[in-house]
Image (cartoon, rainbow, N blue to C red; front, side, top):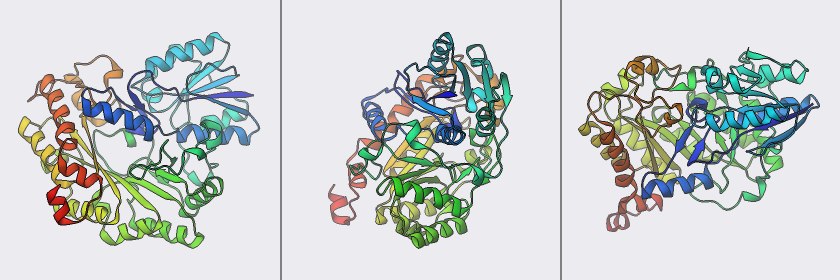
Length: 440
């Protein structure tokens, strides 16, 4: 059987899918000079291949099926499995219609098709509802699904074959070696050390598809070792929403990497209160070179009402300062427009992002994603009916304290204030000398 795996490239702005926003995806349509530059850089460094399609390719190829990959071209095959997203679903369903007209059976996978099947059901032959691997294993056995079919979460993640990157993307080995701010040109290789999220943030979709499960350390390092055999000093992107949830696991990972003598660099997303100076030193020795983390809001009361545990500002500053000392690139995530937010509270959050001094900052507008507790809370306030506008940068509900133009202005001001300042250049260039930083 010939199976087409499709991770369609959007025609508008920069779209991230797969594990971004739990799989709903985000779209940056530039709205200022600063975001024009950001969109360009994201296309160069953040166009990361789909880890879920890489797993699917491994399952199908292991069963002897022919696997072909596309980012937009219509390819003949028996079945096409298409990665779904919220921010680009119209493009995905239009492509699916064309493929079905060629006689190809089309199925959709991913959180969007699982939680919002009404957007896809008229444009496909089946939807795998849930994490896709179990359903794909049945397809590999020749059992072709029809309609909306449950794909059960696999609890033993170690039982899955390692992702086959050679089957779901172009040759990435030639793009390594030219590096800019840690991440190589062309991105890196995603890795899921766990699935789901142990936290309870009401706005986050990462925990609504399946529960939290973690792979064994030996299995994770086996995958890294295999990647090191295929690529010289690969760059690994841990896609777990909370990489350092368990400190002991991080130490065990570092010990096993060093024991095997593996040479690679990696980045991860985590919470700053799940890091300390000693752990950062160990991770850096093992190859840790970039980190993203959520701050979201400066106001502890706002965070608590959204199910997020506040982190003391002193600890945040300590961790970022030590990352700067080690040369670890940092990216802080901020959300503007919580129900409790006012003009002044958002301005204070922007001020804090500058004071904290991370290498990068990403600002988004609070977006209620289907299936989250936040969506149920804000559903009566929704003003946007186009689901593709639920992209993280567009106001989608009626805010009690701010108008849509005000929210849009504050979002643009956040990017301008963070990036268009001399001290940002000092952070970006990793200038440590106090006198030089003050001069800059």
